[in-house]
Length: 113
Length: 112
Image 1 (cartoon, rainbow over the protein chains, first blue to last red):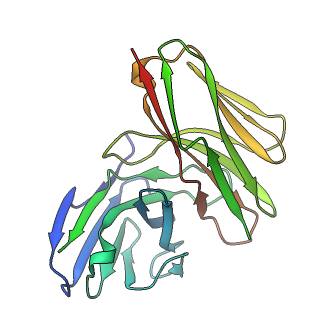
Image 2: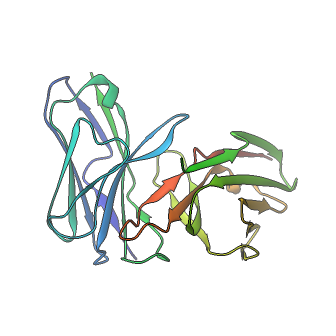
C-alpha cells in the first residue's frame, strides 16, 4: 500500500519557535508538495520540489522554507512560528507527469500559541 | 488569473437523494481535473482524473463529468458513509510545473 507519512498528527508550538514538519513517501515519487488548509480558503500550495535539492515557491511561501536532501523526504520549516501559521499542513507526492494523481499524508494540525 | 470555484460550499441530503456538486474553472491550458474526497482530520484521497471535455468516470455511487468550463460530481442514491468534503483540483499546462490548484471544497452530509 502506497504511503505518505507525516511525522506528527498534532503539534503545539510557541510563537517564535523554529518548527520542523517532516514528510516521507515510499513510492519513489519525484514530486513532493506542502500545502496548508484553512477553513474557507481550501488547500494552498506553500512549496514544492521536483527533485532532490530542488525547490519552487508556491502561492504562499512567506515565513516558510523547505529542505529535500533525499528523494523520499521533504521537510517544511517555520523559521519563527507565528499565530497566523496555525493551520492543517498536508504533504503530498506524485510521479513526474501530467496524468499522475497526488497521494497525501494524514496531515499535521499545528497550533501556535 | 487562474481560478477554481466549487459550489455549493455545503450540501445536506437525505439518504437516497441524488444530487450534483460543481467545480468550475477559469484557467488557461487545462492538463487534467482531479476529484478528491477528504474525511475530517485526514488527508485527501484520490477519486478521479478527467482530461478532456466529454469524458466521464464512475466509481460506485459517484460519477464525474467534464466540460470545457466545469466538472460535475454526481452522487446517486447516497449513503451516510458518502459524507465527506469533496475537493476538485486542476493541473495546468505550464511546462515543468506539475502542481495542483485546489478549489475550497463542498462539504457533503448525508442524513440517514
